[in-house]
Image (cartoon, rainbow, N blue to C red; front, side):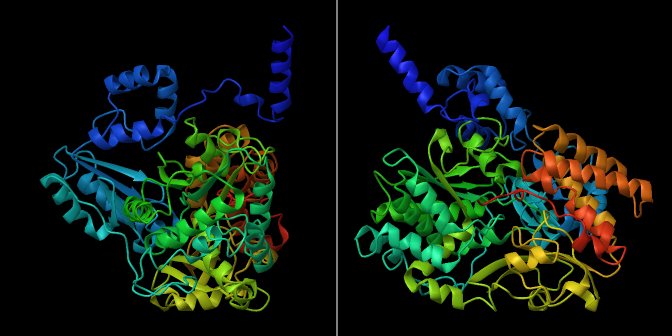
Length: 578
């Protein structure tokens, strides 16, 4: 009896406050990779396959059904010959998306003139191809809408093939390695760390001195974060995760970093594993990034062949089964553990209680990609790359009403106006109407803010945020309320539904705003009350920021006051990198 009492006491001593709700959850392993594999093989999830999986894994069927019903990527009915998905979010909306989707519906919708019954047309959230907006996917192959006819014909003929990742001839400015070099010439930072030429404490000190902050949204100091995880539970199992689940409308910079700098992303991740003493590293990637996933896996294979990845330091890719909410770090952890992707309450934070209850370091694609050059060239070099008081380089995805939508790497502190000019200026020579500088989570700002420096502090002073590094441009004359309502619809659709303020508030607000170009004073007051309630009481960043863009627009149509005077959304962005 004494032994039993002592063991019970040990369990109580290890229990972490704030995780009581997880007590009844299944411990794993995650069944999501198995479900992904079944769907990849058959195109859907037949009942008999789920029953067989339940038997083999000795897991209850209702648990599997709970997963399948939560994640939008999973199909429970046979797919058509042609699955045509058309994006309806803001960057596509701004480039004629609604009109083009209406045309697609006439041609390929149910009973359409070009649909004999073999096409399924579905409007979907952002596909991460805002640079070719309006964007579509045919049988999961992403493309510009102008390619629809060729892809539909190919699907009917037997297959659309794999889309290639978009390459780049010259290295980006944050890449310390010459173009054309391979694994043998790269990974100098990792080799120096493993050979003892530099130690973990020096790496952390360099990151702290450099001023590098998380580039996925929240901007938490990177060196401080690594230090916290390094000091958490010494000697215990730890994990490092690269959050490559960018799914916010207008955000596609990480896609290009993965395609052109897989070596930097993986080197940053491996360096982090050495520094915090983690045994496993993961790249959590959205399933729409199939071309980039292939690039990553090829690089990991090359690392294994070179002996840089192996026993004691394992690295792999975890493919998301869909859902924007998985960009929230704790929802991501729930997914990887095999549960529905619903955010956890904080604290505890992942640095202390993350994947499988172990200390876990989570950073974004861009954050990891910046680590090698900072450690090699030093904190001062990195600081010198920024403009004014800003430090380092920053990747931005620029879309909307610009001549050259694309990914641009510029010094941190570059102004909004300079970045728009780099992208060719406002399309068709129009004047600027408004800008969303940090992705769908960020408040809109007016043309009087063209001189705003794109860094964390300056964006906050302007009443918005740097966010996910997605700058969406709206030309003068754009219906700003309709644009912000489009953003709200995205958040409403992507809410996990766990908490009432987000689930009900976003739905109620969208019902009030849909199809409207203006509101009366009572309706404005109602929106402001909903925004305050969601901002203050939602569990995660999605609900906290969902109505911020709408509120900012309600101020812009009164001379821009709201972006400066109305309280900004609180908490973390919907895809935090803290």
